[in-house]
Image (cartoon, rainbow, N blue to C red; front, side):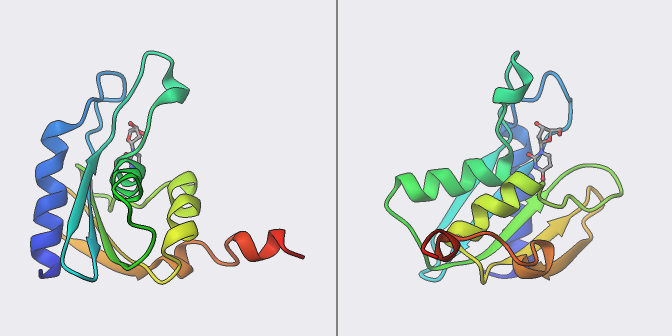
Length: 132
Ligand code: THU
C-alpha cells in the first residue's frame, strides 16, 4: 500500500465522522506490517469530553481485534489547508503500541507531511518508566 493510497483511505473515512458539534470531520488509516489496515473517524458526543478522535478509533479497533504491535504507518486526514496532526492524547495512545510509527498528516488539498511519531512525542511516557 502506497502512502497516497493510505491517505486516500483516511480521507474516505471522513465521510463516516460523527461530528455535529465541531463540524470538523477527520479520518484515519492505520497500516500494519502484514498489510492489514484499520480505519477510524472521529465520533463526538453531546458531553464533548467523551468524544474520540479518528486516530484513537483506528488504534482501539486494531487492539480490540488482537493487534498489539506491528503498526507501520498512520494516515490522518482533515479538511482545510492545515495538516491534520494527531492531538496530544492520540500521540500518547499511539506511543504505547507503536513508538516507531510513521505519521502521515494530510490536509484537505491532498498534500501531506510524513513525520515519525517519536518526533511528535519526544520523551514519550511508556511502561518502562513504571518499572523503575
Ligand atoms: N480530531 C481528530 O479526530 N483527530 C485529530 O487529529 C484532531 C482532532 C477531532 C476531535 C474532534 O471531534 C474534532 O476533530 C475537532 O477537534
